[in-house]
Image (tube, rainbow, N blue to C red):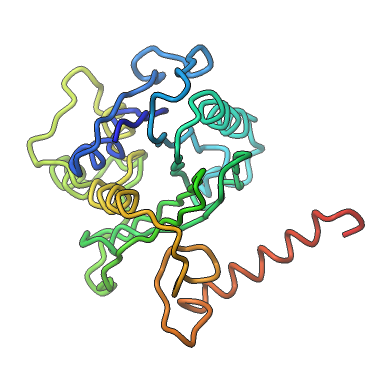
Length: 254
């Protein structure tokens, strides 16, 4: 598949898709002097769009600071990219507090993935939203994590973890370097990325999209359930309950 990666940074997400055989075209990014607001993709050329808009406005690390508005603006730019390019599917990654960003004409799924569900030591959480024009669903194969062996989550502000440990924790090779970046900029670029094994699992899920929703958790997390179950785990039930409450509040008179 030919896919467009927007807000790529150094594109760990795209690297994972490339490792699974996708051809990735990268859009503009501020770290390379580009501006997504000036970019207009051609219609009907890309099978899919992937990317993670800037997330500081939705991060827990804001510690009560008011949002700048950039987060919502960039989610709007993401929708514009999908509307202009008209791909078969789109996949958005971000932090867990990111608002829903559905696109007209596409189904919508919301998933939370942890790095240690894909053979990694860190417990890094990435939030995924997915839409498809053909009503297909995204299923993700996850490993049973070994929480006792989990290491601290890699973050963009981490200035203490030795570089080799820092990059390998994100799935990059030990000799990976960004020679034109300052140390702080390099750590932000790597720390903001999606762990590559997680990105590969997402790519494999895209390769196996299906309209079959049999034994799929009702919360939309993409987990498989047993025949007599509705939810994969207790947190899935809670997530579905909160979503129903939100939907009721948004209805007229709610």
